Length: 407
Image (tube, rainbow, N blue to C red; front, side, top):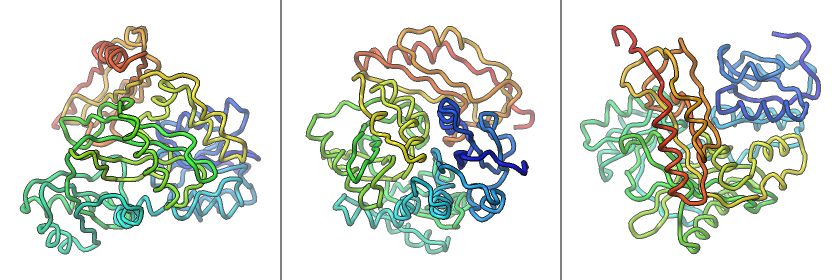
């Protein structure tokens, strides 16, 4: 670990593939970065000017390592793990942007249910507890199917959909294994149209809002594809107002947030989860392709105490679609090579192709967000054009994976 950290650096909490654009934007501005991640092989570390191999949950250890160095700003990416540390350190160092304490409630699914109720958003049955037996007993009285999750989880880790009470015990134990607080929530499954609403707030008002449709792998809960949504103007305005109201209830006056919602058969929205941060799974790339806005630049500007509104002004009105690439296998394997990268990049309408796994890497089944190995983004004048480009590129781009021996 270096004894002399770069001065006037941006402290970036996390170094997953989702954070790479943060480091790239800081470097573009000539701002040095200090990366914090507990994994020495985290994919974004090569993009940082200095690295700190410490858990992003351990604010005291990070401060001890920094010593007398004061960062110019602090920022986090598309991960909930570092949000409490972001708040603590931004307060400690009087950073230009202090991550709001109230926003931490978004990371507790039980607490967030109370917030949605206070905002007049339709709810549904749920039970949360640290006690496995209590969750199993009380969840049996809910309306099946149920979604069983860690209350403080993200990225679909530890999530199971179950159809009968006899499945509860195993699903609760599985969710608890992914919870830092060892707390599990059981929620009634809400049928309907899944959408996400992304917001960037400025002085208590949403200056950027985007609504997207989501498609999931095999109808489950791991995202496969996302596209800009087509909604009637009154429905769009209603969802935008709901998201803005929820941001204010969470204390998010400035900065990003996104909300997973389901539009029921009657058109009523049900808020499933909130992420008081940038959206993951390539959402910034999708927003850039559709509207020409740059939420990464806006967030870096916010973290450094600079004006950020201009980065959120749309410069075009296209349709965009995104597909996450995961292993086609149900078992672990080794990535041998990629085929068709150049051909896929040459498809008209393709705006981004990102590859997260290289030959020799271990590739896991795509059963959670963190197991994706690539991403394709397309844009077009119509939704059909964007989807056609995406289909063409995804057909050409193929990971060749050798199943792990014995798996």
